[in-house]
Amino acid sequence: MSTKPPISARVRLISFLSTAHPPADCSPHENYWKLINQLGQVVEDIPQSDCVLVVFEYAVSDLGLACHNPVPNALRIKGTDLATVDVENL
Image 1 (cartoon, one colour):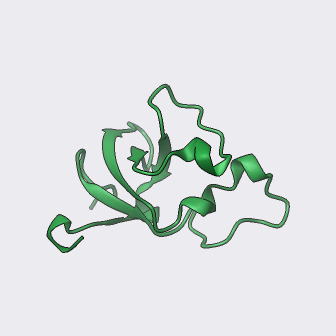
Image 2 (tube, rainbow, N blue to C red):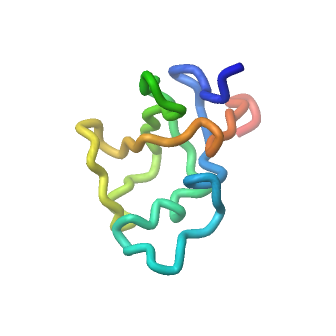
């Protein structure tokens, strides 16, 4: 059974790299834990991995975070770090 949400699913980041807090030596531009609780949408399945590409509603760069993907505000996220959001209850 896959733990990855399907493409077009609305999701909330519940952890990053399976933890709720960044390591002590985390650089500010790589502190993706700042996105916990932010909403996004799955736009691509990353083959051969447990990740999907999520476009966040919040501008990733506004938090001072690096975004290395060609899609703006998109990050590769492990499926287990995401919770599917019921759009009727937003």
